[in-house]
Length: 441
Image (cartoon, rainbow, N blue to C red):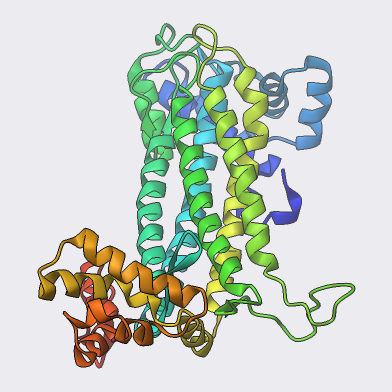
């Protein structure tokens, strides 16, 4: 387990105490089901329920001899229960307990992750609405393209995290299944209604069909969802890192009082949280790959998946919880520089308006798109070589002046033209600000 990134709520899910508690819950509910069906004496069930407990140190002592964690657990519990312990685990196999308990742990982890995502969505919504009209340069290939707004960029992230929320909810459903179907899953020693009773009591669904284990495509799907969420956070973090660069400086990570950026350079303010998120996303992806390797097992089961899962499932849920928390705090405290966004647009010398000029030439001049493209590109390249601003180049081009006058060119150089439909996009994704109980678009 990665201790450094463990937050209290998520960390406690993966402590041995909680793991064995979940295993005991499964065993007790199974005994209840057996008693309800007359398979064990009711008095024995009451005694088991009253006396069943475990001591982790004792389990470890027994496991040192047996080399089997479930047998060690059952033996330790049995020592406390006494004679009636012979009815515990009746007709069950280790994976009935382990896999069902693991599903309960993953369900608990899912609830925390879902709550984390909701917090990120809320923070992104606030930033998107605050900077809805803050114009900045849109970039493709890292190069100036056409204007957008910073709020529009944040709205895209908001919508992506809403998709991740739905993915996580589905992943929770996929993993919230249990099994009490025996050594090869064929219910040789108890009927399926025992499994249905146990799972119903535990608040999960019975796996419709299993072998000795719950099939690992479920766990792989769960892990790949975590990897997609991590990839989204990495994408956002990389964008902030680019915008944080000295020559751009349109946003910055919050730099607290007393914080230091470098041991050597006092001026440094580095995007360390974003870089941390970027690095941790690599671990989640690697763990997702390991979960895919776990799908293919021999026959009705082997245990090659078990050792892997004891690392990747705790670590991945702990890491994604940490990443979401850090990213949420980052967005809530993000430093935004609208003036730098404006200044960076000015550096384009207006070539960002090239497509609109081209389209206006096609529309008004009746010339082909290819010809208009060449006419505009010729002047844009002059600007990029330092010949002057775009409007000046256009006004000095005799061929363009045949079709567009100065007033028409000025109209094409209106930055607000590019952001006129952003409000409609906000409405389409449900981003609306409320004022005095009324929606404000």
